[in-house]
Image 1 (cartoon, rainbow, N blue to C red):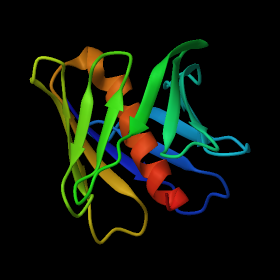
Image 2: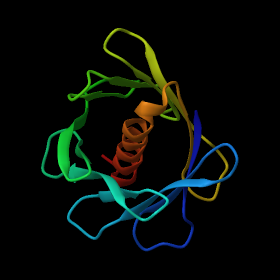
Image 3: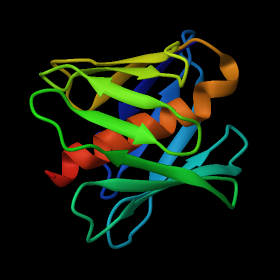
Image 4: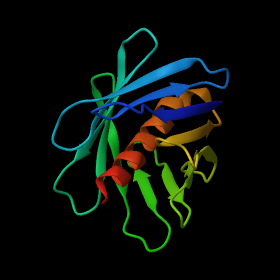
Length: 156
């Protein structure tokens, strides 16, 4: 399943539209005014289904993830040279980027590919293509992209 992640051009807070391959909006992401990034994910009916919150005052970037109101886990950046890496403590996923930090792969605990993330270059705003293998992994894969994009915006 492919999703297209596009940041809105004129927005004071982080806000994104997430589209499917047919151009239909499947999720809307709205930033909330807070200390650190707080991104809420809404379904097409306006229900909040998830949230990504940046933990501040950490040595390396960390983001707590919530599905509904329930804390699920944390996405944390590892200390690496050249290629960025992140881990998700809730499902054993690891996220590995290329040296340019444009493309990422999400790898499952058994080494299976969960999703591929590609940043689209030469766009007015941050835009990504998220290619997810299984539909049940879409929301968590989207949360990974939100955390990576927020970390890059913070300049950490």
